[in-house]
Length: 435
Image: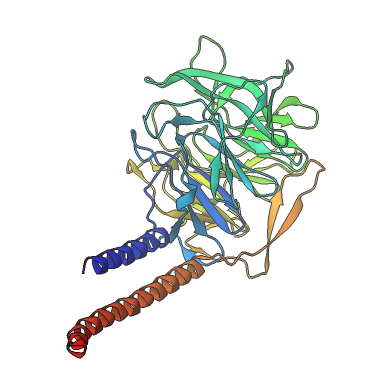
């Protein structure tokens, strides 16, 4: 009977593995990364409390409707990150094939020691594998709390950032350099700019406009060597021209917006930057308003708030992530300031109705339009066929395979048992015949 025990054990473990993938329950987290590839919202890394971190890669299927309190996350077992990392930035390549994970606090998964031997890791979406690219060019120090953007030439821009030189006390320096990673030859270039260079800064948000201008909002900065870190005035917008490699500043007008860090932003196709969440600096506290919109079509840019944006709105959170998918700004995880706990649900803001909603409804069309930054002054939509790798398809496939496998094993087991009984009956008869 021992072979039967091993057989049933194998069946049980196989079904358990299928269930763990299709019914994955992620731990609440903050300071993580998220990108959208085709109809998948991929979530990875972050920390789950002050001393524990995570390396899972999982996704939410955006091809099917869902309720923000009733989510089905799907784990990608082969996509586990090679290191623990948080406070990093993730940039998606132009062809949606590769995720560039840059900087952050990196911890060796075996020794739990800080490991900055590699500044960049890449994830190949088609093969679900992480790798370490060989990078040339200028040397870039370990940096945290940056936000990278990519232009139409495949250049990733990384401005400033924080460098924790004292990892025990989490103290270090801010930068105001502009580093560029060329994703074609995989080389770093640190620009040498002397005119209108901003103060050293980190924890900002960054969005690249169709004309190639990068808009940097908020965060913390260090004005001089005497004064410590302070929050950036939200009206003082930093602008970097990727065509001329020149800095400038714009003083935005409109409604008053509290300064903040650890907040998020998305750029809509019609030129509005929507920011959400964040906290104050020295003492973690809520900011007002939680949601604000910057109109980059006006000169100067103009801030506005939405009076109806509080209905069904999320609590005050920071360290979350935000992504734009068609008409929805999708907020994932983060830390809830009022309850001192981790957010576990998804929050949805409809950019057309300008309301928080609780139900996600995907577009009823065969193709999905993804907006890609352009340096020519207009958006270049990329038509991507809708992928049928949905949650229901995955679950149905998994259950079907599991059921078929289980039925097959049952039949095999019955056959073995019957065969064994048949042999036991025939042996005495064979002996009698031979005698």
